[in-house]
Amino acid sequence: MSTPPSTELSFQDALQMAVQLHRNNQLEGAVQLYQRLLEAVPGHPDVLHLMGMARHQMGQSDEGVSLIERAIEAEPNYAGYFNNLGNIYMARGEVAKALGAYQQAVELDRDNADLHNNLGALYKAQRQFDEAHASYERAMQLDPRHVSAHNNMGLLYAEKGDRPGAITYYIKALELLPGDSSARRLLGTTYYAMGRIADAGEVYRQWLEQEPEHPTARHMYAACTGQGVPERAPDDYVEQAFDHFAESFESVLNERLNYQAPQLCADMLARHLPPPQHQFVMLDAGCGTGLCGPLMAPWAKVLAGVDLSKGMLDRAQTKGVYRDLYKAELTEFLHLSPRQWDVVLSADTLCYFGDLSKVILESANSLKPGGTLVFTVEALPDEAELAHQIQPHGRYAHHERHIIEVLSAAGLNLLDMEAVILREEGGKPVNGWLVAARQLA
Image 1 (cartoon, helix red, strand yellow):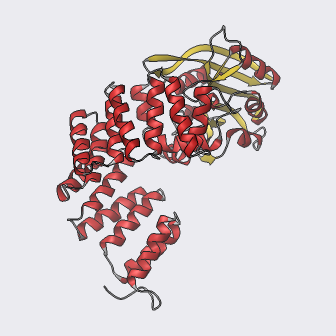
Image 2 (tube, rainbow, N blue to C red):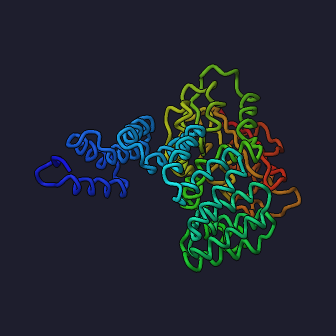
């Protein structure tokens, strides 16, 4: 096509090598090679587009958008560039810009099922359900075996409250692709939401037969059947579940589940800390996308967050309030930071632990003398005999007496313990405990 970037490789060979690095997630190496290719052929649209995608994956989203826009200027009639630009805008939460990009992609390639499927997902995110239905329907007309469009149509039916209709599409997706993990996960979750726990357990049993080590299948089978229940949710399950959930996490919790835990924890801080003057070294333990960060920030001299999910941490970074963010398992992280924190706050993280003894002990040891621990857990009813129990949704619930016992064993003084509603799930309140405790000075 033009002068190759070196005497040893042709342009196409070098491009193929860069793409392979990109596919292997060796992003730095891919970008370096893309840059050399652009030195050889300035303005090459494919290279600009690919480098833009790599920059976005590296967290340099603004530069990624700029590069793809340059690719579009050079080749304005290629739908794929607009589609990926829309994907980036969606990841950034810029829905209006994403809609424009997806619509342009469809205009350029009206018979592309993937593009109609993406456009439908955006319409659904905007709660334009009729438009979403039409887009998914068109995708399935163009490609009757389009598994993602079937799953997305199922999600649309579920969003509209028609769970039996959703199940029809998930089952069809599994007929088209029997090993599809998304369809299995969605089918199991929907059965659970309908109270059909045995049917959900059967979905996970069949999944385990084909993929015995799949973290979601393994954990959720235990949750639905009570067989092989782990002491806490396994790291690989938590990481996979929340990486998958990261993009939609805040909208689902805030818009559909009336999520209260961050504000409840902040209110508890206000009860037991002096007025905020940016005076404390604070840890958001299980920070997720950073919903607690802005609420903790007024008290924070230093605010750090820790989570197992890179997808969640990437979202938390955009809040602009954390000095440090760590990818780590919580108990081990606390063990490695003795007497480091004035405040440890954990909103809806300890519900992924069964016996709380170890994580509470490590929390206590990580606090400075006089330090404060605030957390939530889901509540077992008073009449329950067990100290803690896994629930069919995959989280653990805890009895009041277990919480009091583990705090005492860890040498923490219980300051406050309040029965609260953490969120809604399936139209019903999720009962929990909001707890504050203090390390002895």
